[in-house]
Image 1 (cartoon, rainbow, N blue to C red):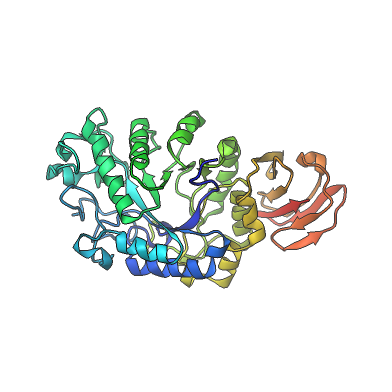
Image 2 (spheres, rainbow, N blue to C red):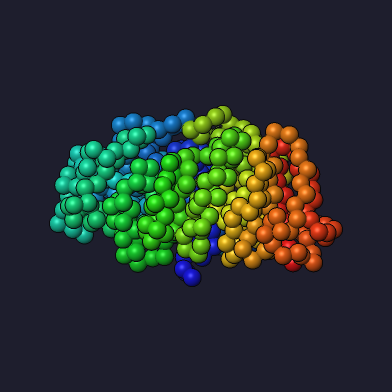
Length: 415
């Protein structure tokens, strides 16, 4: 079993709610809330998402041509106007120390490549004889953000830059890196170079790769060998169509889930969200209560990482109760593999290989009654059936019978 990411990571990420603009105060407030109300249930990572090095970051998308906060080696630094404790070259270490003092772990987002600003200034690459102007690949740019050039890994300076970047993160106390624009399209050399930098960093760091549009299963073995988790879809928002798309994706990727390597169905757009986001206005999640339960049920039985995108202190009690139901989260922390075991149109069921967990989903637009024998579900007849969402035992019979409203789900623990 891999020591890192032995179970799928759980945590908070700033993207859904604060977009590119999250501040230190907001990060600390969410970390404090998680430590007080959620950590005991397994929630542990606090992740600052994209453009933390842009002093002028704005809501509703990305700046272009921004003057980024870089050090003399062309390495991104937290913008001090947003992260005051980073002033004087301290970087994220004071914030990471604070998160660690709460008993949590700290993560950052980083974009594939080398900052264009560092290339233009021909910054020296720390710990090497090379400089930034020697390593850009100007053909492999991101389609959605212009901060960086790609890296030409036929030049040894490319690996040296990633080594210096991740070494800086390790020195700050970073526990989790979300490396973006890596696998859609799939840049095999960038993935390998970044993974190598993580392995040489001298610190245990979980590596998450994004995004996952049209990600081929043919990359599964490479992903398992060079990351701890990887996105399997585009960005997911609080729309039923986004949730519904994940059923087939998770079904196809489920055989590749296991300790140390997890297909990632993306963040949970729950609670208070969209405050300064890329998509939508400030709002409570647009998902209905049934849709929220369905999402958490699917993510849990498929053992996807759980990264919530809410402003936790401003979210409702109902949202926090949803995220801290120990009987549901136990499915996500389990060791047994899982798969879709039954399907009838928009009605589906999943079960774990050890017969402990069964989930039933009504993806259709009308209420539906389910009457599934244990053989239908591929599990032995149990002596006890526990409804995990309602935290109540249910009558054991020859079949599992329930009625689900549109877009609703049920999760059962069998013994």
